[in-house]
Length: 244
Image 1 (spheres, rainbow, N blue to C red):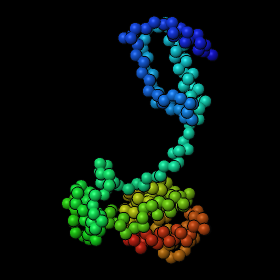
Image 2 (tube, rainbow, N blue to C red):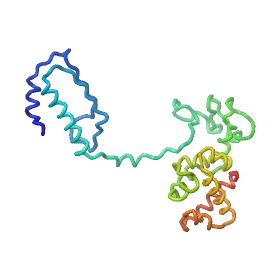
Image 3 (tube, rainbow, N blue to C red):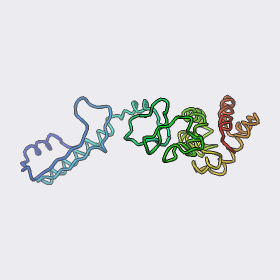
Image 4 (spheres, rainbow, N blue to C red):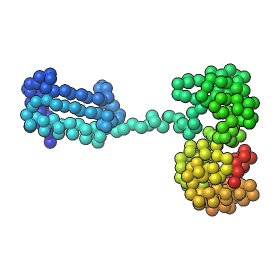
């Protein structure tokens, strides 16, 4: 056990010159004891003239403080759960843009210019944006698909079975993005890096939805109560142009 009082007595009695030591500390503010402590953000840079014994005691004391910080204080992550998950959607405009400057009658803003166009001219097989953004394949596919938030919520609700069986264990937000922009199963497989078994299961799942036969999906561990929601969502994807 380190005798901290003896150490600090030695420390106070030690005489230093300003150019003989530098102490840099990057730490959280003091006050009432916090409910968290991040020791990785604490950096001590100490260089000064003192006895070997005092240096050893200083090193041990710092170690004791770090250990007590790690073991004696809890880390409060509860506030992190209140942050809303951000969906995996490519940014349409640069980070310097704080909002859509387009008028309400021309709300679509081109990607690399300030050109605004009406929605009826988006995905009409005519390039109205100089960069061609209004006719991008992924964009035009997503226009006809269920909203990505709806896809994400569906996949999250069914993720215990549908993510490993159909989507290779990827995060639901990535699977939702893939379903929103992929033109067919091959495109989806390439986007998400699916295995041949995943692709086979996807074919079975969509075929089951079209035929109204829940048995292939039950064999994939789908809960029976989920059938109607799963069939509805898969049919929505097919109706929006997703091809097998």
